[in-house]
Length: 316
Image (cartoon, rainbow, N blue to C red):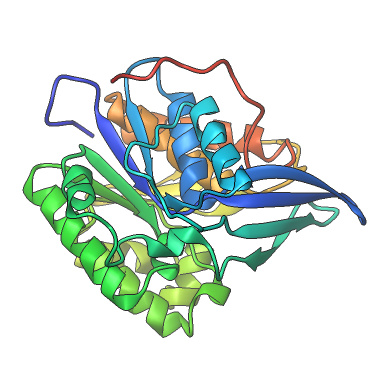
């Protein structure tokens, strides 16, 4: 991936961060803050060399104590919040994680009153749309789309089109949670509108089977190519991923023998490390290997995010 500027690339990641409650036992919970796009932002910042990428998380939070603590959490992970609005009286959404003996997770979401649902709504200043479109890379997910109204999705798509018109790129992971949609058909329609303006697709095959009916990697890649996506990496969970070249598919295996404690955020970690490598000029294969290596580390720890590293200096 090449950027259009010589300064540090600017990345805007659009989504929701929530209160995370993770079961330590049947009646004890650990408090954290996470969400698929924020997780990718945190892992992108973690994977990039200090000062080489400006990572911005675009969202809406409340002004309750948990929302304020959440923002401090973003900063600790090297993620900036210049374009994340505060909704007076708003609150943070909540989800709970349970993991089984194999480390597979299930979620319970309580997000109906989440302030992030105001993203791209009528109260969002036009200046934020303009600022997003000025970034070198804009990233979002299917979960981002699921919390927006139909009108807000249309406004977001306009911003993505403007991003590309100005020379920026768009990356999309079709992360799918059935509870966020009335049907897979609704999710597919929203995804297709975004894919028409997408440069980099980072889907999970399991999600795309549910939403788009893709039978295998080849079908997934063919659909994305037909939509005009130029760079495609299909994630296959414990089987690694497949990079779609111009004329071939290249398999990249997952890290062998990785201990599995909690699979939460493995795909988000892969995305963050992959994008950080590509922004640094690394080829797709070693970038995917970097993603697989970080994902293997993440699944060996509980919760969505690895323990904090020292905060990296971010460009201004």
